[in-house]
Length: 261
Image 1 (cartoon, helix red, strand yellow):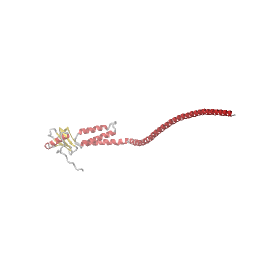
Image 2 (cartoon, one colour):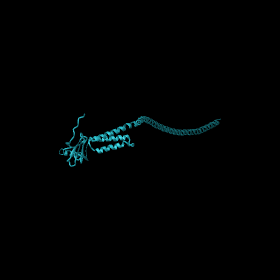
Image 3 (cartoon, one colour):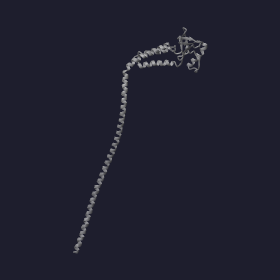
Image 4 (spheres, one colour):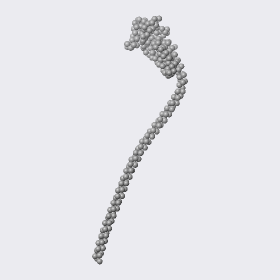
């Protein structure tokens, strides 16, 4: 009986050891399966993270594009508001221009007679004025008068031409001028140098200085001057006007101004 118990114990030991070995093998298989599942989940998680990162990058790009588009839209709003103001101002200008255009015909009817009156007045002035460059001044007026009947010339240009004549005539009063011409003095034609001191005095002198004279505005004729007294002053004044001598004080026959009535 004792031996059988020992064998039973030994057999039990062997069975127990086999069970342990069998359990250990099963545990290894389960661990491998768990590891495989874990690795699969990690791989899936990595793929998911890649997709998440990609989606996040795409979302960031979309946000930046949205911000840029928003800035562009805001800029366009400001620009459109400015354009609206400019258009409003231009509409007002156009309205004023249309009103002005509607009055052009009336203005032309008023300006044309005024231009003719101004031309007549300046021509009469030259005719009554001292004979300083008289032919050239009358020729200038005649040229402008010829434009008055030319339909191709605008009324503005005609007005400008008349104003230019007035400007030239005004300039004569502020200059010292000299030129050579032929004068009829005492029924005789003579060659003389004309000296104009603005509109204050108009004198002449022959090249040899023997004849000297001044324009008398009261009698509208040439009055002879004493050569001994005025020969040298007039000659020096002519040289100054020709830029051949420096400015100097000269004794010339200047009529005293009359008191206004």
